Length: 544
Image (cartoon, rainbow, N blue to C red; front, side, top):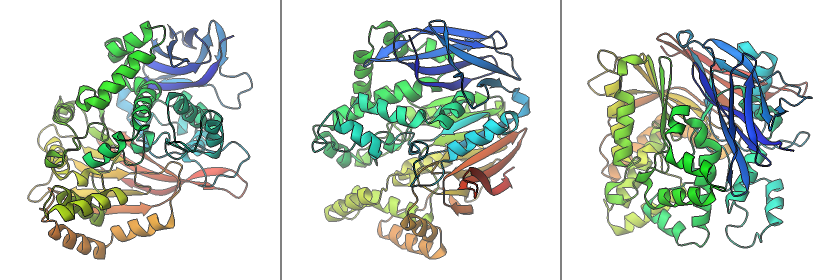
């Protein structure tokens, strides 16, 4: 009998359609049946012996929330008969009622129930409990997961034990993920958590990868990539990471129309086993990153989200280093500027923050100058060592891309038809903060902010806390200026100031957008005296 291995995940939604992702234990017909009569059916497809389906549901009514069930070969498998959670729903709020968007990044899988959690309460688990207690009042309209949904290079004890049963951990890559099958284990461990499984079944989600979905500091530099490609294990790791990301995350980011026009999706579904087709695609993405686009756009009424790939689309050659290749940069500009008067709020999702603590920004710009040879070969070698050792690979480590994004944001936020807000949503750096830019000699009409929130569930060592607190300080800013002068770095296109934070803990941010107003709330997951967890508000403020 066919059964659910993982899911369902409610992914894409609009006013009249949705997609539901599942992994099953065998080939089968998959059906999603809604209480209002809407439904969708499809057959599973196969990759590396695993079976998946992305079910398009049509005929939904805007402004409603309808319960749904999942059937495999005609037998109901979701919701489970003994589920402690409310029924899963597909909600399609009216566009004119605004949006509530929760976001964060960096989530280690929670340990099994009853085991001590070494990094504290999981913010997604805690959000799930709140939504279950008050589905209508607490459910976000969409959840943005901004990277590090799984950790291929930092595995749990249980996964380490499982891997040791299939290969020798003394051989590279050792206690890290090696292939597609091991990636499936990561997703199973992360998404079979009962609270997260139910939450993702009833809250639509948009996702993008960051480095740990593949490996720490993925695509730091050309020298880094050359060193990785010289190993005998990297190619399999990267291809497996891209293949699994496409199956488990990227497919659900796309609309039914985009899926219907996607030749790769058609080819994988038509093949008896799509492994070779998908592997060829991943190999092409590795050989020529500009041939593949992982970025995407979603419009939610008068809210536009542009999710940007800031990992795989990089140009790494030192003399033309860029966060986005020319085609990707042109695409981003097109998505931001197209019918600009059709949205009131622009959200640019990028796993890596655009605006960082000033000291970090200046050190990253200095390292880029050193590595390109500004102070000679000896400094170039030192700059590369420091770049890798200190994880200097954010937007500010690509100075021309930093300035180009600043120019695009200013242009989008200025003049007739400008939105009320432009928000850059990021994670990665294991703390949360709000930073507001200012442009010399001009002020955009839109309110612009860098909103950074991480981790959802991960460790925040004391060294991180102390380092980032100092990084935002006035003495650190003065030190950064001295370092930038040594690198002969010109001033960035914008100035900025921190207007909130830094905050440390397992946390989520929520943007509430109604009309041309915007409100930001940051909440942290905290343990209560009775053994439960709760999301406690750290800051709640108007942005516009």
